[in-house]
Image 1 (spheres, rainbow over the protein chains, first blue to last red):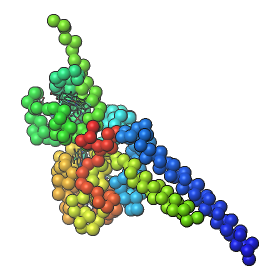
Image 2 (cartoon, rainbow over the protein chains, first blue to last red; image 1 turned 60 degrees about the horizontal axis):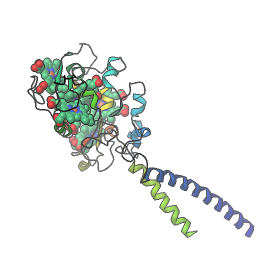
Image 3 (cartoon, rainbow over the protein chains, first blue to last red; image 1 turned 135 degrees about the horizontal axis):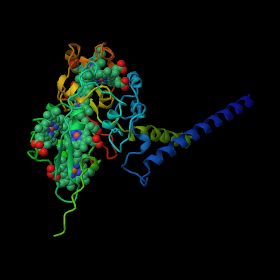
Image 4 (cartoon, rainbow over the protein chains, first blue to last red; image 1 turned 180 degrees about the horizontal axis):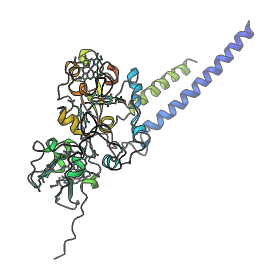
Length: 199
Length: 127
C-alpha cells in the first residue's frame, strides 16, 4: 500500500518538477521581453514583423476563420524589402513584374494611364527638396484620388508642410497609413540641395 | 507545496500576458467596428496588403466608391449582398462568397475602427 503511494508520489513530484521547469522557461522568456532595460524598448523587433494573423494582436486567435488567413511574411518573401510599413517596396515589386495588381475588377486588359510628371517642391532649411513623382502614383491611383480634393492640380498651388503630413493631411492621407510611412524621409526628400556659391 | 503552486500561478499569469503585450498588427490593416459588435458579430479586419497585391487602389477607391477613411463608407451587409463594396468581389465569382462570415469578421472583441500602422514607431501619428 505505502509502496504504491510512494511511487505515485514520486511520479507526481517528477511531473511537478517538469511543469515547473517549463514554467520557469516561459517566465524567463516573458522577462526578456518585459525587461525595463532591454536594448530596443520601442522599436519593433525584426522577428515580429509581418506576423501571422493569430499572433498580430488584432485578429481573434480563438476564431477558426483567423487560422485560414494568409501570413503576410509568406506573401512578402519574394518581394523587394523596404525599411518600414509592410517592409515591401511596392513600386519595385510591380516594376519587376512580381505582382500584377488589376486595374479593374476583371483582368488587366487596358494598360493603366500612367502620367510621368515630376513636381519638385523646394524645402526651406537643410532637408533635400521633395520630388513628387506622378509616375509611381498613377501606377496605383486615379487622378481623381488626389485632384482636386487633396491637391489643386497646379504646381505650387498647395500649402504642404511636414506638420500637416504627420496629421494625416496632404501626402499624409496615404503615407503613414497605407503607402510607405513618413519615417522613410529620403524617398520623398530625394533631390539634394544645389551647391549654392558662397557669395 | 502551497508556495510552489502560488508561484506557478503567477508564472502562468505572466506567461499568458506576454503575447497580449507584444503584438504588431500588419501595416495598413483596417479595422471596422461601427456596428459589428453592437449587432452581435466580431469586428471586421480588412487587409490592404493582401488586396493591393491583386488590385490597384483605384479599383476600390474610385470604381467601387470606397472612401479613404476607416468606417466612413457606411458599409452594411445589405449593401454587400447587393454587390456593393466588398460584395462586388466576394460573391463567389471574383473571390469567395459572402457566407464566409468569419474570414471578414475576424477581429478581437473591443477593436476600435481605424487603420493600423505597424512600422517601427508603432503607427500613424507617432514618429
